[in-house]
Amino acid sequence: GAGVSQTPSNKVTEKGKYVELRCDPISGHTALYWYRQSLGQGPEFLIYFQGTGAADDSGLPNDRFFAVRPEGSVSTLKIQRTERGDSAVYLCASSFTGRHTGELFFGEGSRLTVL
Amino acid sequence: KNEVEQSPQNLTAQEGEFITINCSYSVGISALHWLQQHPGGGIVSLFMLSSGKKKHGRLIATINIQEKHSSLHITASHPRDSAVYICAAKRGTDKLIFGTGTRLQVFP
Image (cartoon, rainbow over all chains, first blue to last red; front, side, top):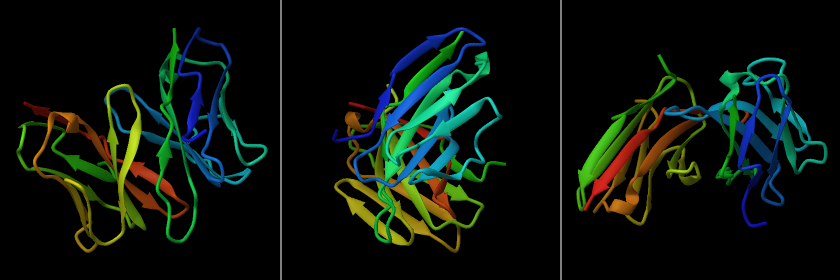
């Protein structure tokens, strides 16, 4: 597609359940980022992929959170044993990392609500 | 203290007014992004700059590396400019540190 696509756009789940959020970046973009945004706050960095590898996962809050990008394109953010505090909008962004570029393109986000 | 701070947090203006949003950061950066977020969550990148000034239409962004400060200006503001404006500092391995945003409302 033309832009960054995230699915689902909305997810309501119960405490303790497992959740997967998907991000399909712009074709050819090597860099992919996951952010989390709570109500009234700015986005918070979670993890950054360069190609297939996680270049920086220092923002993942704990070991219940995990993300993969096995073929260097689509990425999945996985949350185990969800807690109410995980409720937020999860944003994905991609960029074509190069010397003269770096503009970020964001998806519409996946709104996660944990009841 | 946040590494990236914005002011004001909320801003209201009448259509046509000149608007300035400020961003200060306390860390070394390689670039600074200005982003626009509309209700519903979609984020659009407005500018990425590492020095000087950039202009796009009615939007102007400036950065002073020595003072660790950037500003976003909107000339001849319009109600459709109403959104949250976020600055984000880029460090090292492309990690972005976001400010908490400035909520702008422009009234006709």
